[in-house]
Image (cartoon, rainbow, N blue to C red; front, side):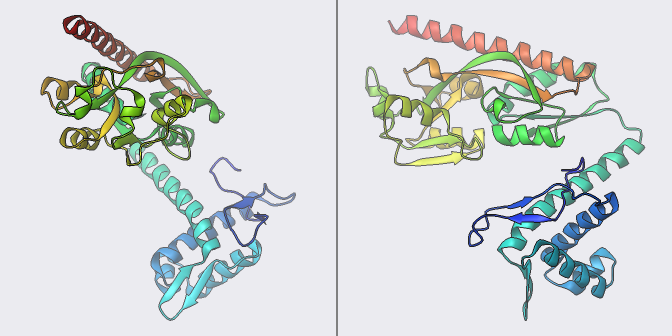
Length: 353
């Protein structure tokens, strides 16, 4: 693969042609020039535009090329791959299964080029530093905003961009260059090469329910008891398992019959407060709800509910001063909130005994 993410279109098809899971795109052949690679990349962008417009004529106008030239480029692309990418019918042009597969890669290239263009334009306007940070939804609910509020006064000219994503998407986005660094769990870190991490604090997950939940009538609820109710689970991305799935598997307990996967902390808390759903959250993400008595932690805990939170960055990409200071604030806020929550747990336990 080249540095801009494009690949040779001399392909090897999946071993099973009836199930086009993926195309294995090989490295450049000997003698293939950078100009040929550029033209191949351009054909991918042409393909994405043709599928989006559903017409060669409309796509040609959008791309500012002639229709015969665009049609010829698509024919050559199909010939080079050895598969049919487009279906031409009375209602326009649609992508085949192979075409849609290749189109998904083409769209990524298109988005990256547009993103690069935006960054170049912004750099030319002599704007201040742009800092892009990715974080988990559970940390964006309290830790990161509090840290940013303390960091902002010292860096008024830095344009800060914060995005919430699930763990795996954060890591892939970091490798793509979408973020300068991410604040996430150490989980799945070793699945990808080219990243480094440093643990900055440790927090603990708790199982939350509404205060009127029937489980509070039990003196010592078990995990089997908890699986009798519906759950809201975080989206972790791909086929990675959630903390709950791993924990129940270790206890040899079946998963709840009703589960919802959600990437929004606000949605999760609202659903739990309004129904018998249960959710696993760090307590600092539910501080306001605890104060308003809309959520309440169940008296159940195991070591597996602790998690390490780390700053993760690309190998070879040193963090600048503004980045390091933001990480330092996140580390301080996260550690303080987790410590305060632990002390409040001790006080609750003492008052209950």
